[in-house]
Length: 111
Image 1 (cartoon, rainbow, N blue to C red):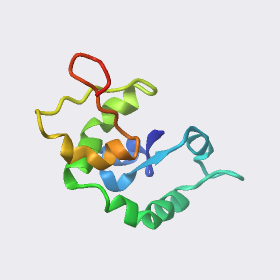
Image 2 (cartoon, helix red, strand yellow; image 1 turned 90 degrees about the vertical axis):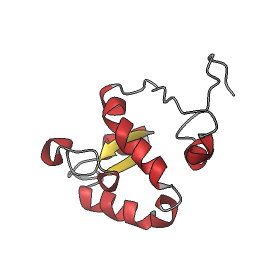
Image 3 (cartoon, rainbow, N blue to C red; image 1 turned 120 degrees about the horizontal axis):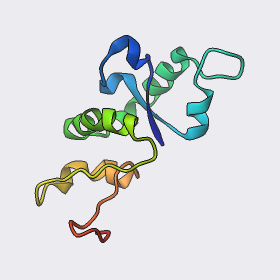
Image 4 (cartoon, rainbow, N blue to C red; image 1 turned 45 degrees about the vertical axis):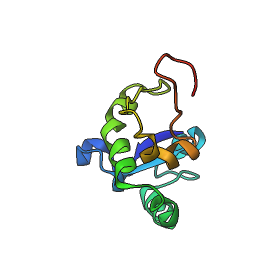
């Protein structure tokens, strides 16, 4: 999955949840305005249709995505380690369950 801006970052200059969408590499490559491509209007509609799923995530989970979006964008395909205080992993339950984040033991072994 790749996190992409619906409206170009160069235009909006911010990483807001409302303007971010997770796309598979195939859909990401099809983003554009030409024939057979997925335009911004369609991306906005697709995200609106996912409102039920989007509301699944807590404010903490959405802020986590927004906070790390710039790092994820600058390092495509490279994971980012997000340290959480002990006992706070319950706040990211749905991001882990849906496969967006992967829990790891502090010493590197998968938890």
